[in-house]
Image 1 (tube, protein in one colour):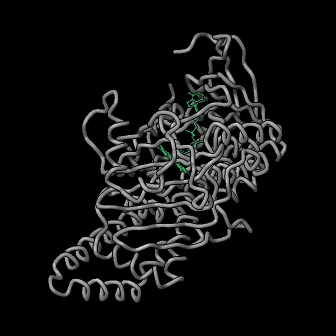
Image 2: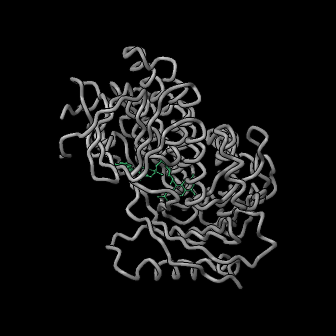
Length: 456
Ligand SMILES: Cc1cc2nc3c(=O)[nH]c(=O)nc-3n(C[C@H](O)[C@H](O)[C@H](O)COP(=O)(O)OP(=O)(O)OC[C@H]3O[C@@H](n4cnc5c(N)ncnc54)[C@H](O)[C@@H]3O)c2cc1C
């Protein structure tokens, strides 16, 4: 419980969290003429536990936000080509264009998030750093503001028409509104271990590359400061992470992916290995009277498809656009945040399912191998696969009946001496597709369940 507030202030919107979702929401609202105060317990520039591949769709969001010049100035190379290899097949494609941007970037979070904070400030939002929100202020069932502790240890009460919880996976706002327990969740089958290397492979500096060997998955993304980010995602280890385990598991996974080791030949590791384990993808109830949860606070997808930063920026901006004109009318405001939440659920459920498939932590199935094989000679198929990550294409475009029939026929032909693995795979995929369909039509139909609202 925070101490008695020494001061009470008023704003139109208070945003908790100043990184992707928070800065996008705040910059957009400030440009619409609203008084926005952003609170973050961090002091920027500040790092966070996250890799940072930014697909063309994410770069396009940075551009819409007015942050792209500052991000580009950090010097990350433009990655113009996607490379994915597995089971002896290689798919290589250019990236699709989104709003005229046809490249991917990989920018370390310290610089990226600082550029976002500066963008929000320039737009007119007031960003208060080193300020930790400890509790919400309620007016009956309506969220009416926050209490926070600033750098001087004073407790301040900040009242606003809308409290935006852009405070990440361990969101205080989600906890205090009673939305912490997701209404839909799926545990990841993979862990994440990553480190930076001084990149000496000039020929790879414009390529975002991924390799799959057995159940392991590894990536190499050239980033700013002449580094390459190398992330491995082996099957999840249920054991507790003890000191030294992250480095050991990282090195062991690299050894199991020889082409990635080869990519790093001549490169020197710069800094320690970082780990994110026990990951789960989820949807939380994300709107209610006087509050909303854009970004990871309300919805998270496993990092295997690198969608989080784009969605935090995108749905932060859309939230701001939806509420800016109606902040002075509580009934219209509540309808606007509810409609915003329904839109996010509808638009994200397909990529959520797709991400969970890739996060299974299993080796490539016969149908996946067949997909890779077919994509090596079918540019349209390769383009669909790359486009799904940039949200220019939908997973449904990959799973058309005609394409599935062709892939199945190809896989059966290649396993004609023993078709059982293919038949098993088909049965499994049909069961997964049926479960996804059911979830999309029920839990994720776009009207999230009502959760208890705290009035503490
Ligand atoms: C291992 C890993 C790898 C990833 N790789 C990628 C990738 O390659 N590409 C991609 O697009 N996405 C990636 N993601 C996802 C991405 O990190 C998130 O989706 C993104 O950071 C979400 O942004 P956000 O603004 O919602 O939250 P965050 O970035 O988590 O920011 C939350 C902010 O809230 C502040 N805060 C929290 N509580 C309080 C409080 N009580 N008071 C004040 N401030 C508070 C924190 O200090 C923090 O600054 C990855 C995630 C992980 C875990």
